[in-house]
Length: 250
Length: 272
Image (cartoon, rainbow over all chains, first blue to last red; front, top):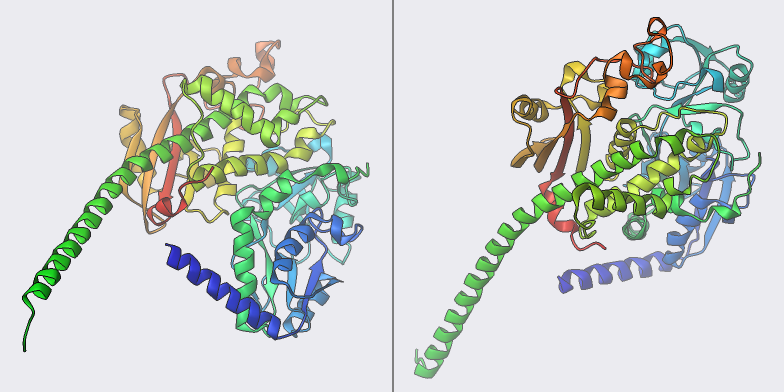
């Protein structure tokens, strides 16, 4: 058992030395993903940044963070202009992710409070419900096979418009890929709606790795991440973090 | 070739010693395997009882969950877990188990994560019924555990024809176990089962139907939404939005199905 531990330490030290000897800094792309990473806040105040930065720093290498839109981030990582990109809930052609997802997002429906449906497995309650869905967003099978009437919402501002239409009663509900982003008071994008989730239909949210990153570097990053996970998962870190620093905006 | 007699004796003694050590090692391994099999039952039992205690606590705190405003801190974080420990003590008349296996640690952490994910809903001062009932909490917990990669699966299920959530559909093993269980409801343990094609330990614990189950699954007279109303105005839709099934205390209440992959059970001990 001790031999195994010693071997692991030796391999890790080797990797660190080879990582540092490459002399390059690690370029990390950040994508906005409230409430985990809010661009209205300093990076240092965002729980997801703090968690990832905590273990990346153990690599003893200079790290440069850059804030990007999702589309730009995807292009940059595909081209190898950044080494890592997170959080990402889509798969990118030619780009791998670290083995373990950071967390899982759960899609849901947002309603005006008067029309709130708390348990979404009660799909018979969707009969003739007018549900707005942003173009290109894949809905869960429970909603797809229900008798809900789906309205496609086009454009870049589909989520904002969907929420707006829901609030004004023009549609009964709005499908959100991750309603926590709008239904959480500590989040600056909080909206006056009530959302419930399609539990059981969760999607992994990853750290993407540049295809140009050397195998050694990927291995070292993966080891550091696994070590951090053994200590505390991001889910639990997020659930138990000190919330006093996050001022309520509403 | 000349062989020294003393050397032969020494070599022979060394061989015997080595053989004895190998033998002792195998005896030790065999003993520890037997102990592990026994331990598995404890791990499965503890996880099931902790899971069921959390469902009981969620039922007990329905008023607090659904009320508008007030201090709801005992529904979150370490306070939530402490209260589950109290429920466990009174429900099973035994101390809360040691957190000596990763599955127990992950279960407790997942409970905290699930409640945190519901914090906004539970704290919403403009909503009454929040939909956080024992069955939905148990399902959220199961869904959360399925993302943890610890080879642990828990499901609160029942016979397929009477399921409300299609995602709780029983698998072949559960269907078979429940068939026999309806006639003779007792804990069923299987140390030679499969889970997703992998060798696993599985256990099914039947749940008796109790009066509070009938508030949703019973008849309209038991539906709290009908209390104080004329019979002609009663609804057979319960507060969660489902049609009441008309069950009685004599009906099968479903059960908790728990599975742990064999490959992970031994590698995750000694957590505290």
